[in-house]
Image 1 (tube, rainbow, N blue to C red):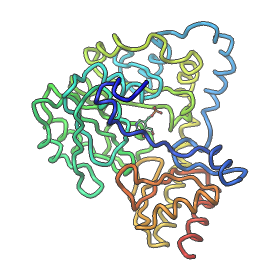
Image 2: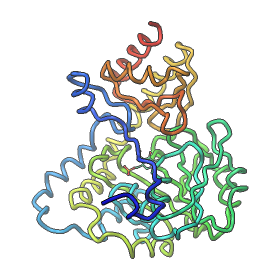
Image 3: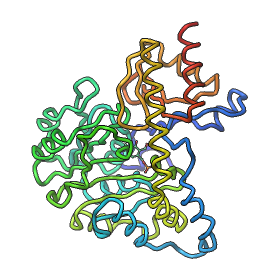
Image 4: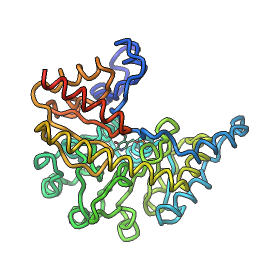
Length: 364
Ligand SMILES: Cc1ncc(COP(=O)(O)O)c(C=O)c1O
């Protein structure tokens, strides 16, 4: 079908740039076991309890899944301390972002997004005909006042990733509350907590604590990173029931497979795997910080499972040299940060291989 048959707002959507896959790098450079540190996945693998559940329930795959994902939502409600009715489950939190946009945006509405953040907010908003406004940041930090000043009559949604991807920076309890209090009650505030399990700061508050008093907050949670289920696709939206109601109306009936529902519920109960994941992440972050300091590289202290590091004007070349050595990180030009790479924390030996390669490239 020729261009022009789609609505004009679809034609201009930038394509999402994913991290390169291991298979692609193995093929292109003839490398046996590339190391992927590009998509903030869980280097420990998946929760063993989730894998058990997949084996146990595989006989169910000839039947359609539970459209309301009741068991999964019930377990999630216990984990996140809310009611099952305050949760909608999705095929990854990407699907919830999509559904929120489809349920709430009318063409020409405005959606507000910080300058450097997860790119799918823009794609999903544009696909509904929204006008996306990128609010400048203060350096790499979210500028609450600038967001407040940007909100206008047509603003429908403000997206905030807390902590933010790709900067790794978070809004503490006071700044988050301040931001929410400045946003008028007819604007939805989507607080994406994809990385909140990794937060070490003690003045962080989950948006879930705020939903009962705020009928405009939707919190997003994912099991892709902390629970190792990126390939299975399980995410949640948590909000007051009235906010979720239109989203439930447009949700595809069988949006989460049975095995994803079973594995997701099991993973949420697997506290040991989560503890191991956090220990590996924090140890890895501390190692990377020390190494970056030794190399004199500027980096952004992170509350997530990745670090943004400034390489300078040769960042693209360094990224390519790393690829040649079988180490896949993310070059940040598509996020507007062309002097930076983002590296996800790996296993100890992967972090060491990355640093050895980086040192070698930078000191050539
Ligand atoms: C901030 C943020 N939100 C959402 C997602 C998507 O998560 P999911 O795998 O649940 O779709 C990501 C994935 O990288 C992310 O970084």
